[in-house]
Length: 195
Figure 1: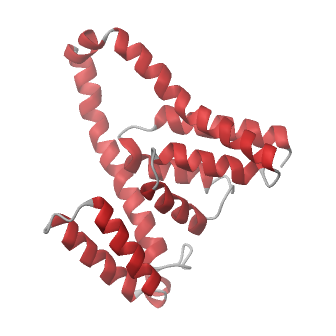
Figure 2: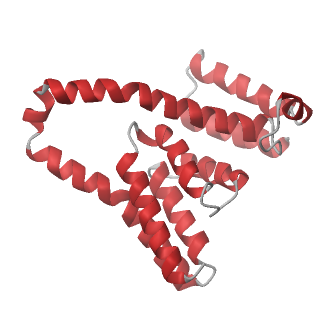
């Protein structure tokens, strides 16, 4: 891919991600996956690793992912990677900046508007659907890696027991025992290292 084509693709792809991502980081995961993996910029397994790293590093998932993907697509030369990171990060952030600037000017008017309340109520199910899509994506690459688009028999042949048990344990510790996110991530990292 030529450098200018790569930059334009990154700019368009990440601007679209920033513009149509409602519901925060978790809801954005499936939208980012469609753009990044769907365009062939990176494979699904690498995308899963990027999201994992983005969860444990400071900053929003979309910004961290954009920075990495921009460098990956435009690299390996340092200045090309730096430019790709900048363009991707700027592009994913720009729509939010514009929308927040518009909404901030007339927040009280928007906040009490029945039309806006109706739109937000309608968007909530879409946000839940996007989050569930991200959950199923991660379940597949974690519990059934290497299955591609295979059927149930193919998935069962690739089932990974220990990641499934670790997920269940971590869910229990977080949801029922109120273990915080930082100790949870440290525990998961140590367990993954041992496994």
